[in-house]
Structure formats: C-alpha cells, structure tokens
Image (cartoon, rainbow, N blue to C red; front, side):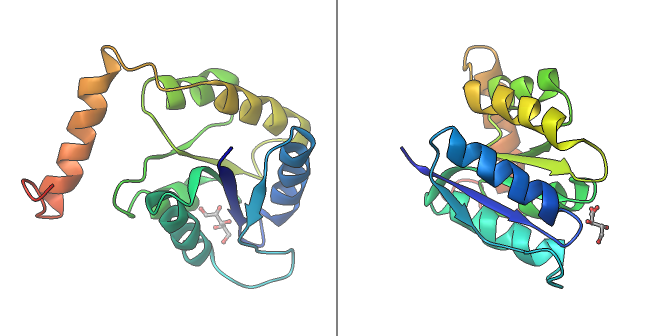
Length: 155
Ligand code: RB5
C-alpha cells in the first residue's frame, strides 16, 4: 500500500491530527508533513510540500487541512500533475475521485466537525477513478495545464 501524505496549517492542525489517527486506525500508513497546532507555517508552504510528494509518486493520495480547505486546494493545484479538490460532503468526495481523479482531498477545520470529516474522508478513500466518459475530461484538464505551462507536446 502506498502512503498517504497529510498536512495542515495552524487552523487545520486539530482536524489533521484527528484524521491522521483515523487513517492509522484504518490501517493506512500516514506521512505527516506538519503543522502541529501552534506552529506558524502557512498553508501554501505545507500544501506545496505535500503536493510535491504526490507529484513525485511518494504518495498515491494526500489529505490537506486548513481553515476552509480552499487555500490548500488552490496551492496544491499549482503543482504540476496534482488534482486537488475541497469536499465537505460524501457525494462531492466520491465524485472528486470517480469524475475528477483527484489525488488530493482538502477540508476545512472551520467548516466541518471531525466525525463528519471522517465520513467524507472514508467516501473519498473508498472511491476510485471511474474512467469511461470521465477519462477524456480529465485528459483535457491535464492538457489545459500543459498548455498554460507551455509544456504541451513535451510529454
Ligand atoms: C488561516 O490562515 C486561513 O486563511 C487558512 O487556514 C485557510 O482557511 C485558507 O484557505
């Protein structure tokens, strides 16, 4: 089994700790990039490190937590090859995998209670990219990235 990278800023640290313990209970090997509560590293710093772990193949999936989940997703999506989605409900978490092939889930500790976050995380973990009609759309997203970065045709 590949490892799951996790990270948070100060606002997300308590929920990150809660979900790290939940993942370990489920048998996942977790690589924690910090922060601990009270640390002052900002969300873009953590998101970049964790997303690079996904892009490099060190982690098949990753979980990022900040106050809203939004800054983490915006930052992670700037790392080439990474598709990060914010989800606070089970359906969106499932579709983030099945439709969008998101390898990174982000959540907001100021948005969702820990027990509800467990359910959302579980749906995301249990879902796989469905391919089919979603495959060309994900390929188009990747093509947008390549065009915007000026790397189209360099693959
Ligand atoms: C606090 O810095 C807060 O803005 C952050 O945790 C997150 O919600 C940003 O998207």
